[in-house]
Length: 469
Length: 152
Image (cartoon, rainbow over all chains, first blue to last red; front, side):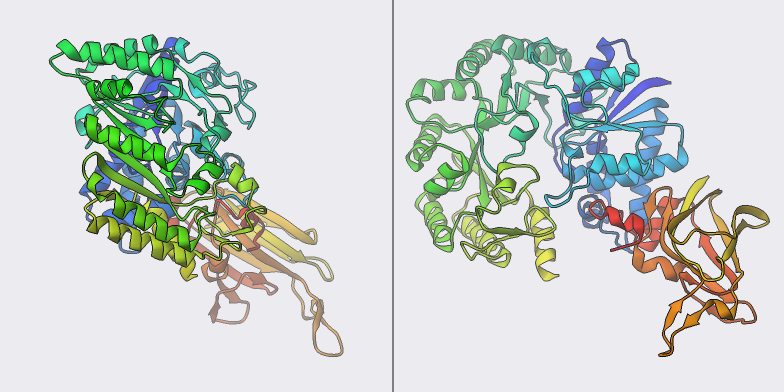
């Protein structure tokens, strides 16, 4: 019997490994517990890929849609997960929910586990255990606990609180409470333990690494800054030592930074790039990485930095959100359109792949702004494919407990049942208008030969369904 | 084993309804003195099972009408919610799950307002409650805790 099985909760439709089980496993082991990390999310994604009911299973995971046709396949999937969990014979099952997309499946999985293994202790945690919708006053974790589907929940950083939970210290901050303590020194944490991962099972294989928590910016739509109130970073030495450790152990040199931004602390970021560049000079298998990158003015990101990003094989994910300068600055991203153009030009010159992240129809954007956005892409079609590898769209969401959520009255916004369903009474842009704009924009990008990813096409579907109600 | 909860709304008139709940011959629950207002009936049973409820103690005089023919008082137990291991069945399905035969009749009706003497059955079928919920197409609602009280 093992002390704890730590699983990623299914529902994240990503082809990359999740980090939390490996992080928590190492903390639990450092405290003397026998722990196994299982990236159940990926197991489920692989199950779905092979299923002839792919769409139906995805809709079950994300919207809890129960298709009559696929009802037995859904049952098989839930049993597949519960069998896998019970095969480890754990005393405690810790389910880590990355986002709210993990919530529905977690309910069904716990429901089945309670029936077949009533003595298994279930604890949930992660940033996905917060409320489901903005208007709801019901806490997701409290609801599951009150219905006895779980035993306990852990809010906030789990490295210490899960260990305290396993020790039986239920009064530790964050355990069955919303008040939790942020870890003060990320450099002290043990390196994630990926021994139980099979990296060959991932469509996009690489080692996830967390270099920072929180953010240096305060964008009004973002829930990260509500979760981690203070920006924290690891030193370049500490991050690079972990990279070398993981390379030695797993012979993998591709790293995914799971964070809000890699360049929050420019001094440490620049130093880390120096270490990677130096390593890459002689290494047979060179390090490559990708991560979020905030745009700043050109003096802060000079040519020398671009040279290093190139030599370190970096891919940058740029959170542009809106190409309307005043909208973007007001929402909290303090950079100009000239700054964006500088980054596009530098990336082209230094062959640095970029992924642009864009919110379609931000609440303060008008229909005229939609036209400007189309023109903006037309004027930059020479960046399609190179250096802009892809553009990831998402519909504007009003997430619970964000600044945008609190500003709804100021923006004259009426919100519906899901975060992407809202109407601005100031701009007179309806949800239907935004959906049409979303369609028009994707068609335009296709025509301009930009690759695009409707990162949350599922949200698009949910919003579309709601407009039909 | 599973925990079944019936959320109830009780109306009393000349006393209350009497209910006995069985799984085959095993008596799971018994009450003949319900308190008026919202309440709960909880019992534990094995899965799958057929639950039989016997309703009694209702007389014609317990339903009182005003001079316009409207009911102003009644003796009844209304089932406003069903929870199986904490997972609520959608309110629209509740009445459909009960198979009711009134004393002296052989007609089966589907009712969740039990203001009659008779026998009511509910079939908890399938390999597990999870299968049962999937079969019903029953979603767990994370935003409407009030379903717990049978309201929508």
